[in-house]
Structure formats: structure tokens, C-alpha cells
Amino acid sequence: MLSYFQAIVIGLLQGVTELFPISSLGHSVLVPALFGWHNLVGAQSADESFYLAFLVGLHVATALALVVYFRQDWIRITRGLVRSVRTRRIDTPDARLGWLLIVATIPVGLTGLLFEHPLRTLFAKPLAAGIFLTANGVILLVAERLRRRAEARVPVTVGAGPAIEADGPRLDALRPGEAAGIGAAQILALFAGVSRSGVTMAAGLLRGLDHEDAARFSFLLATPIILAAGVYKLPDLLGPLGDGIRPQMLVGSLCAAVAAYVAVRFLVRWFHTRTLTPFGIYCLVAGTLAVVLNVH
Figure 1 (cartoon, rainbow, N blue to C red):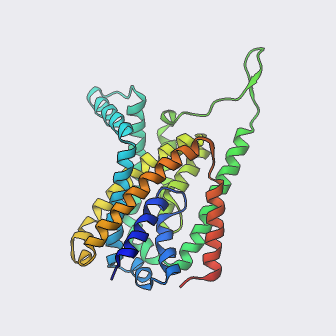
Figure 2: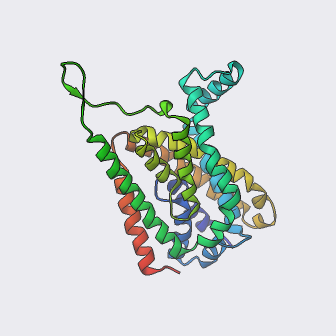
Figure 3: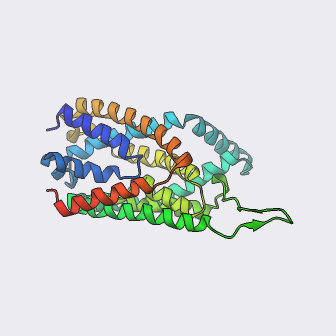
């Protein structure tokens, strides 16, 4: 049904592609099709699927890796939220960031509960994944282009001194509506091939965040969403759908957790000085090839 080799490959793939802006859901469809693992491809869009039960474990492992990496951030955010509830005031950056994450989580949380299952069964197929992966590349490249145009705005002159660039907004200075808009962008990731981290980063860049803050907000925002989705579907793994694949799930989850930790560490450093452009180009090329070849 599911070999240990397949579990390791899909686990490593999930850990990397969930955080890289190249769509884990799209790759979980395209890579098995490329390797000829047709039982996994067919199971991806089935109503009841052992493969989806397996992916639940990988998602939980990925979320736990994010919690470990950002543990200091989450400790500060949790303390800020608790203090905010007690004092009924939002008077620290950590408290404000915590409430922004809550606001940003609501749109995709509600939409996912209503539409995740029908969208998966309809679009989690190789051809559709290739089309949406191509669209994901366009989103990333357009966001970068618009961001560069915004950075080329007319400098602000202060007194008689030299012209200076106006600073962009800090992450904790986002307005609730802006945070909700960034969070709502995750709804696009319900389509296999569109990256959750990619579209939230793109939305953050368009709201004026720099790459580093956009990436950090994206990863923090992804943590509760991925974890909640995994826990919500955990009964599938513990029920009949998980029979015969639980040992493989443990191996795959370990691989996913390690890969996710390495991936987020790499990406945090990458976006300190670099952009989404290479990932956009990759998605365009890979998605176009998948459509042209029409991997079955």
C-alpha cells in the first residue's frame, strides 16, 4: 500500500515544500505521478484515502518543527496575549502580533472547513496541479515586480538634509484589516499547486512588508493552520484509513520534521537579503512542464 521508501520521499518532500513557496500539495500530487506511484495519485483525490491519512501525520510533524524553531517567538506572543486578555489592553508588540495572527487565521480557517474537501477531490490531480503551480509562479513574480515599483517611489525630503527613503511598516504595525487580507490569501492554497507560504509572502510584500518580515509572518501564520488541520483530521489516521501505514507514517513524519526545520532555517536566512524570484521561476518551469507532459 505504502512502502517505507515512498514514506521517506514524501516526508522529505512535505517538509521542504510546505515552507518553500512552491506548494506542498501540488508536489504531493506531481511527484508521485512522476515516479509512477499511481496508487498515491489516485488516492489524493479520493473521498476516503489512506494517502491523505498519511499526509495528516506529515503536516503535524511539519507544524511541530515550526513550533520548535520559533519557540521563543511563540513564548513571547503567548505571554503578550495572556497579558492583553488580563489587562484588556494591547500595549506590547508581542500582544499586537498575537492578535494579528488570530485575525489573519480566521478567513482561511472558516473557508477550509467548508471547502477543503470538495476542492481537494476536484483539483488534486496532476494536470490541475501543474496549472495552479504555474499560476503560483506568476503570483510570486508579479508580487516581486510590484514590490520593486513601490520601492522606487519618490524619496522623502527631511528639512534641508538629503533625500531619504520612507521606511515600510513593521510587522507589528500592520492594521487588523491588512493582517486579515494577508491571511485570506491562504485560501488560494486550497488549490493544489498554490503555495501557502508563497501567497502569504506575496500579500505581505504588497502591503509594504520587507521580505524578512513577510517570511516571518508567513511562517508564524502557517503554524497554527497546519497544526489545526492536522489535528482536525487525526481521527482519519487513527481510524481504519490508517491501518497498515502507521509505521510508515512515523518514519515519514520524522523525515518531514527534520526537513521542515532545515528548510525554515535556510529560508529565514535567504529572505534576509534575497527574494521570491527564483521560486517563481521554478514554479513557472515545473508547472509548465507538468501541463505539457500531462503526467498521468
